Image (cartoon, rainbow, N blue to C red; front, side):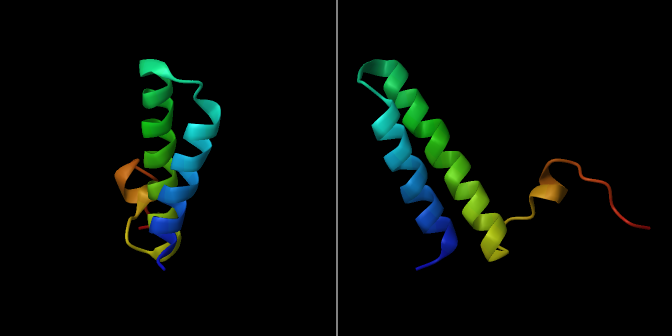
Length: 59
């Protein structure tokens, strides 16, 4: 199972645990799921966050 999928599931579970319901809870789950997916993708090498966030390149 790829780390990005594990990160997505972990973020969604944290969002569900933090959310007591309503639209705000949905937004929290959505944001935490996206963060988990990004971190997992970074660990798998599928996403280069330094490039996306404008990290300093070595010349």
